[in-house]
Length: 240
Image (cartoon, rainbow, N blue to C red):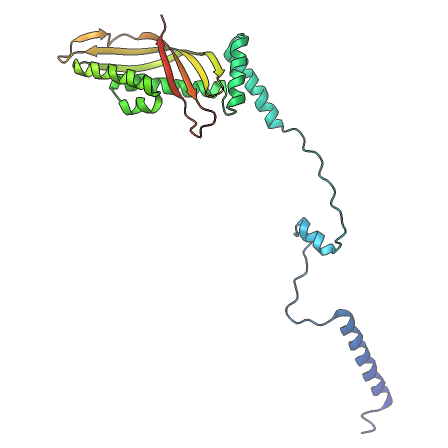
């Protein structure tokens, strides 16, 4: 027994117990519920701030946002489109600017593209007697005028062989914001083939083998406060 607890062995045991006690006091113990260590390479700025543990850190103010280059480009593009559409007419240019101010989604180029599509749909719909298409694109009074003309044609037993060829010239002639609606008037120079025939198929008007040019001036309008982005034709007239 004395040999087992000799002095050198006893001293070694005491030193080992002391070292283990110191390690435990420094490193602590693990229970299995500890939070995982923070990966600073992946942690978010908020997590990094929390990891520092300093509640008195004052965040630096953000620098002022630089002007949006996209906004500047859009403004320059809009002004170029207005100048091109106005053809040196200062009154028209001012009108186009007022329309854009009231309806920021308006640009002359995109509007004209939509107006050309609407024109083709309307003249084709009128020739075919398509009242539903016309009703969606025309203001009530204008629609009723078109519908009466279709009814008269149908009552006479006439049909219209119609082909839309193209729009060689389209231009904006007027633009304004009347504090209620934005209004844009467009002149259309269209090429079509139109032949009106009676019940027996005899030609009444037009020419099925010849392209003819027609010129119209239509006014489009919409309320800038409306959620409906579509424009409607509120007035039409034929040009000489």
